[in-house]
Image 1: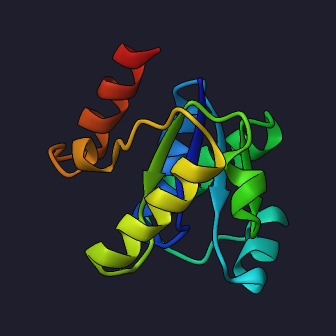
Image 2: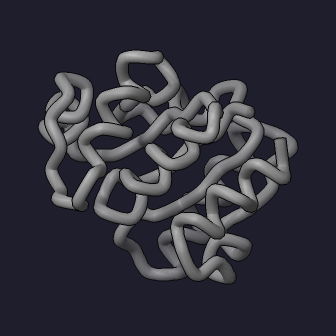
Length: 129
């Protein structure tokens, strides 16, 4: 499955990596060019025990990619998840922007808030494949 993750902060980056670890093709979008370059080069701006192993494996296997371009990030993706540090109004505008750029869109952000853990998130993604 092709998934776009908007925002590469702690939650977005870990979630995107988990999606990739479950066999999905993930494109992570962030407006911070320096952070995107760091991620592309294999650097990690957060700390989570054991995370580096999964992050590096999915980079090597080509399942996770990083961009600053929203248009590139959402191109041909089936699912979209927003984890940008923004108000609900800003996130709604972002989802509307994606909706206008690509039809149809399934605003899956509301489903994410109902999940309590990364393991639950990974199980949910596997079920949707």
